[in-house]
Length: 65
Image (cartoon, rainbow, N blue to C red; front, side, top):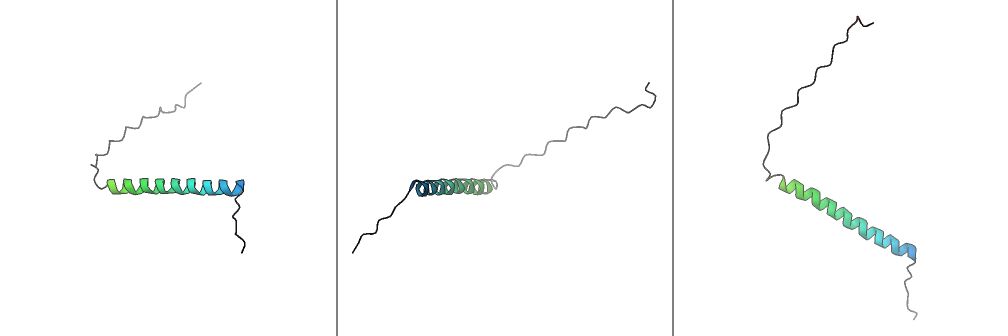
């Protein structure tokens, strides 16, 4: 009976590393989103700031020379 040897070339190794890094990043982003959703229940609501007044535009005059 012959032993079955697995061969991983450089492309396969980098693909595995890339998949692990992407999976880790996905888990971190998902955890951050769910953490914010969970803690938003306990945050104090701040009143909305009043909107800044809109500056008036100078009126155009028809008698310019």
